[in-house]
Image (cartoon, rainbow, N blue to C red; front, side, top):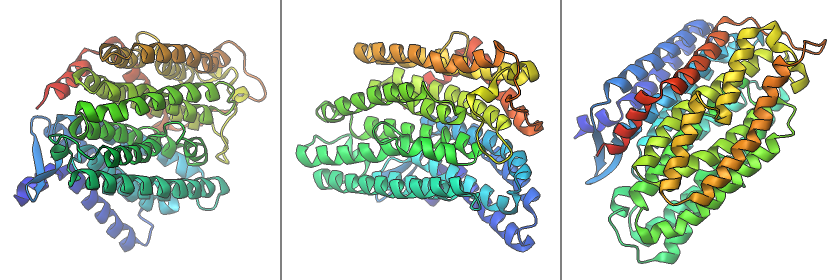
Length: 482
């Protein structure tokens, strides 16, 4: 029994043990072995990725008192891989950024918290009990609160961390009250048991579902629970913003899908949460795109872009079928590469003080650095959903799943929002290519590791755009797996 339980959480266990070993190394070296700590973290993430890939054909469960609490199936494994790849890319791009800003003195703690955040996100995806969902979200959130304020000698990260902590604590309260109301209505917090029950206490269950939705919507940054995201992404260190805008968001959306599919897919219960989640999706994609339009700060624009994309991805959750699950997996991969690539490209243009470059400081940048220019064009085209990019197929699969599920009106709203988003995404490309450099044009940092991350992400976006079949089939395998 214990062996089976450990097998279901083996990757998370490796990350936690690796984090503890890093803490011992940091303590033994009195904080001086920061380069070794960074390299060991990269190795730890690669080991976790290898274990995740090796687990693809197996399905294991961890049960307590006869109820399955954690399930490691193809759905969880696919998102574990996305989380780990996102963390790896973000971490690789962090080294030179932290080094040149004199922030390496606590890089060991930075790495430990990144590993713990990954472990929390992975538990969240695998959880089949609302108590585990709550514990996983808190593990993930606590690590992110501290990471947001990593540069404690600067005002913006501290302000962002305090705002994130206060609003995050409120969201956790909504979540735990939601769990309590669901338990009061059903007598259980286990999603698999809930999915086999016919609800009788509709009032308590409605309140519980509403509170659960609010708690998860905050973590995903759905409107109107998005207020923290632009300030936190803008104030945090840019490599960390790249991580927060991808891995935790995708993990929470995947958890939302599992919660609704496993526990609340009974027709009578679906009628309680489908309308509210549909409204949240429309508000999120619309407000995210409209507020992104006038933004001159590219980093803040990407923050609102991530909010808008959360609205698109929720459409796959609303489909709640095999097509929706396939779309969710594909969108998770595509969105991770596009968003991390765009954030890392932005960090290459930032000022030495950490202040983000404004849009007029990108003028003619493609003439100075063609690689960065073309990479940014690929990311902007992908986020828009232009054909022959990963973003196009991600939106195509999501819109198709929603259309087949009967959400024609929602697909029309999403298509109109995609048209609106083209104005601010392609504006960046136009400014970089259509105008010559000016005295305000920023100098691109010559960082090899961050530049490598940008190129890898750009290649992935194009490769998935021209050859989406393998990832598409993998998403179908996830959806068809028992």
